[in-house]
Length: 465
Image (tube, rainbow, N blue to C red):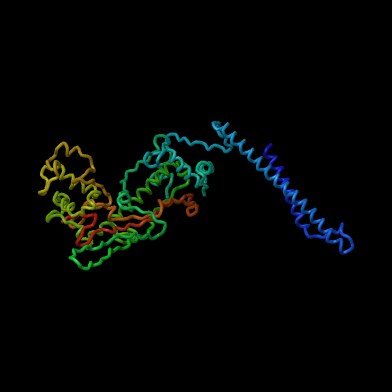
């Protein structure tokens, strides 16, 4: 075999080099065997010994060179052989000694609900993970093999505490009648930060241009900027789950927790985003409602005198708000309002034969036409889409904001540090045989461009008279 031949040559080369090293160590030692007792014979004997060592050293050096080239030759021959074998077996399948990972094929789980998890497979993986961290040895082994994860107050007897999720033959789905939130995360500018504090530069003013006469001196001016600061706050929720419930139906529990945590986190964020007053109730966040604090008056439009309710708002009020919006924001703007405001005000005007105000909405001001009644909700209004915000005021009163119009991505920024983190512990409620779950989300919101007393920002508020 070529490989063994190379090994033999390497061993031979090593022995040759070792012998050369021994000769180098002997250089300079007296040749006592051939030396005469007289002083005159000693130099001649030493010279003959040195010549003999040099001749042998040269022979060994020549031998080492021959071995080296022989090794090169054998290695080249082995490389050519390997290349030819590669060509010969190019189409042959590669045999793997690694055990193939089993394919997970999920059948129709009764606990799976489309829209909560991406697929039944995801629901199954999540359910098995929940069971694994609560002592199920089979689930723990499955999670370790399939996912590569090492694993380490709801109840099953009371329906209101989760017992309704325990498997029954007739149904295993969850009847969950709640509102869906989460608009703020899609409206604001989103950034991800790796630290607890983020500074974002913001332009305040530009340079100034001047008309000059001949030989006049140009007045210099500088652009100005400031920094928008975001300091991350922690938003969290926690609940307890009985281990019996997890053992009976972990998939439905996983689905339930994902839905509840998602609804809670997004709803709380929306509340802070629009209504935050800077107190601990809102995590210290000041919401978009601060536009009405008296320092952004150019961005706040009041309805006409007497228009103090949703029923009395007219088209002129909405047109006035839209007219106040800067042109740089108009192309990407939308209306933001509670669904109740939309139905009781905007849609009322669309479907009313006696639209209040002197303005019109084109074909939509002509009464209860088939075109009016056929429009879906939410739809567009004055050429802009309508975004329903469930955390906004559903029944605004005198002097309060009824709607916004503009581009919130230009006025507001939301920073977060990673995604929502879900963790569990079986230690704290060990005596109750329960597992406590928690979700945390670190973020901050800053409405940095709401206009001034003389210049409107990219979002304009319409408030009742």
